[in-house]
Length: 104
Image (cartoon, rainbow, N blue to C red; front, side, top):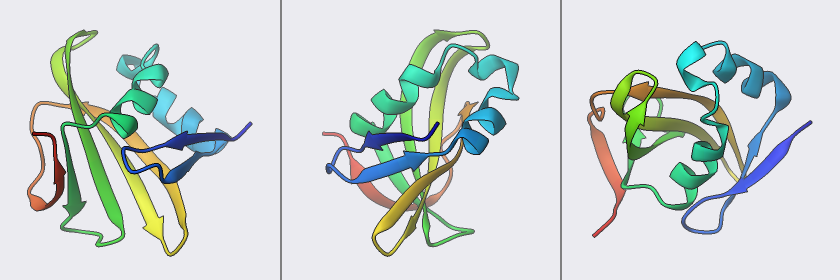
């Protein structure tokens, strides 16, 4: 079943069942699926990936995940009028790249 999320600009972003299963292969991501919507709609920053200009990295910091205090990074592929989630993971660091949006 495909889900449609909205980001901080109101852009529709698809999450396919295949990608959802991929994300949940990481045990630390279990129970964090609601946080994906939150990270898209209320990110602390959005970075354009250095390795893929069509990929935007949405970051939001969470305290007390299964692996400690971490950023949730949601990777969104933006192609013309389509946007979909590639993956999501917890991380200590924000990757380098052009800042597209920064919460004030």
